[in-house]
Amino acid sequence: MRTLHYPAFEQMEIRDVDDVAPQADEVKIKVAACGICGSELESYKNKSPRRPPPLVMGHEFCGTIAETGANVSDWQVGAKIVSNSLVPCGSCVRCDRGDTHLCESRQIFGMHRPGAFAEFLNVPARCLIPWPENVSAEAASLAEPMANGVHVVHVSRHLNADTVLVMGAGPIGLFCQQAMQVLRGSKVYVADLSNERLEVAKKLGAVRVINPRDEDVVAVMKEATGGEGADLSVDAVGSGITKRTAVDAIRPGGGSVWIGLHEDEMTFNSYGLTLPEKQVFGSYAATIDELQHALNLMSEGKVDAESWVQRFSLEDGVEAFQRMLAAKGNDIKAVVCP
Ligand SMILES: [Zn+2]
Ligand SMILES: [Zn+2]
Figure 1 (cartoon, helix red, strand yellow):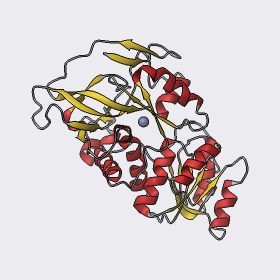
Figure 2 (figure 1 turned 120 degrees about the vertical axis):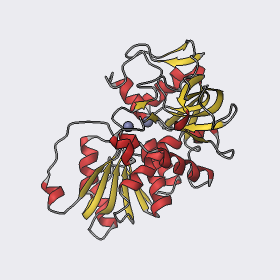
Figure 3 (figure 1 turned 180 degrees about the vertical axis):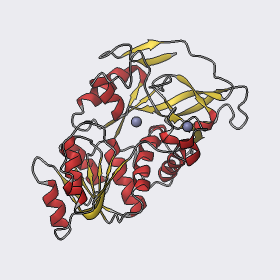
Figure 4 (figure 1 turned 90 degrees about the vertical axis):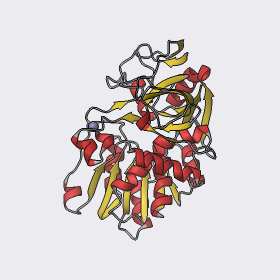
C-alpha cells in the first residue's frame, strides 16, 4: 500500500509498504482523509525524539472498515468511522478515572503505532465512532483537533467565559475559538501574527482580531473590558511570550488554558498569577466522548472545518507537509486523502 513515509529526520517520501492483517480486536481501515497535525510539523522541524523515524505519521483520520478482526462483532465491513487519535489501555487508574487521554501506556497513531498517512491502517475497534453521512471526509478527519477545542471548554467549564482571548489562529486556535463560541456563547478575540489567519478567525465569528505586530494584545483586551481583562484565555501557540500574554490579558480571578506546545522552557513572573488569583490549566488531546461531541457539532453544522482547510492527495503528501511547514498565506491546515 502507498504511504507518506518519514524514513529519517528531515526526509519525507511516498513509499510502498506491506499492510498487515488486523489483530483479533482490531479492524482494518481504508483511510478517507487524515489531517496533518501541528505537533507532527513541530516534530519534523525540530527532529523531535517524541516521533523518531522511520515512521508513518497521521492521527486525525476517518475512513471505511475494510476488514474486521476475529473478535470484532459490533462493526461491519463497509461502515464509515472516525477514529480516536490514541489508544488508551482501558485498565489503568487513569483510564478508570475517565482520563483515558492521560493513560500512561496510551499509544498514539503515527507515534507508537503506524499512522494514517497511508491507504490502510489497523485500529482497535473500541477507538471508533460512526462517521455521519452529512459530514465530509475532510471535516470528519478534523473531529480530533475540534475535540481538542471541546476539551479546552471542558477543562475551563467552571469559569466565566463571556470574553475570551485565543492566542494563535492556527487549526487548534480556530477550533478552540469555535468551541468557545458554540458551547459557551463567548465573545472571542483572536490574536495572530498572520493577517490571513486573522481573516479566517473573523470569518469564523471572532468579534475582534489582533495582530501583535500592530497592537498590544493586553491593552486591547483591557480596553474591551473596562480595564479588567478577558475572563478566559486560550494559548494555542505555546511559546513563552504567548503564555505570558495569555495570563497578562485575563482579569483577576480569570483563567488561562495552555494547549500550545511550541516551546517548553520559559520565564514567568509568578506573583502575576498568585496575587490576582489567576488560574492556569494544561489541556492535552481529548476523550472519545469529546470526539463524539465534536463530530456532532460538525453534523449539526455548528462548526466550520472546511472553508479554511486544503485537500491534498496522498501522492502530493510531501508537498502538503512542506507547504504547512512554510505556513504562508492561507496554508493553515492540510488534509491528506489517500
Ligand atoms: Zn494532533
Ligand atoms: Zn490506561
